Image 1 (cartoon, rainbow, N blue to C red):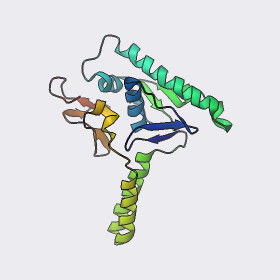
Image 2 (cartoon, one colour):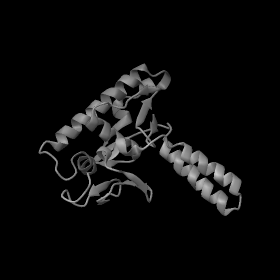
Image 3 (cartoon, rainbow, N blue to C red):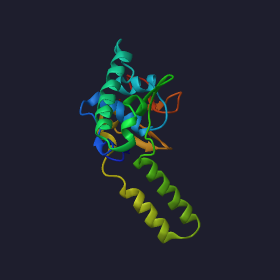
Image 4 (tube, rainbow, N blue to C red):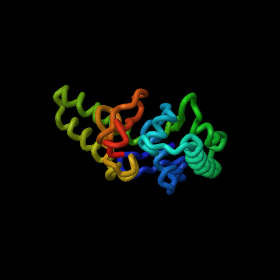
Length: 189
């Protein structure tokens, strides 16, 4: 699975897009993609979708969105060549204790490459090779293809700070995997 989150969300499996067009399913996939290969808790997903105002049916509705994403993954896996066809959608988007994990299975994730290049750039700069450092930092910046705000947080100004996506008015959640709103009345969710 290849994931691009540094701009418009693009998630592909075997070259086939699995990015939903439905806004809420897309939002679920975006949050899972930002935290690829790590558990995103159900409360964090619910918080992202409804920001402190979830309907009574929030868990069931979330499961529906996950099912929609899995259906797109299943369709992509059916068309994928080679050993990808031995995996199922439930192998890619896994139900874990307390949440969900989107497995990349060795695919590319642009935000990880960005972090790697930035780290290399800073280390190279510290070593005094400023030309190489500048090249590495330019390469990292080139990975950004646009504003991520159209995908994350319903376009409410998500920013990448301190190694995590944050949005104004939201405090880090107790699981530290995603931000949560400090309060539904004051947060920009």
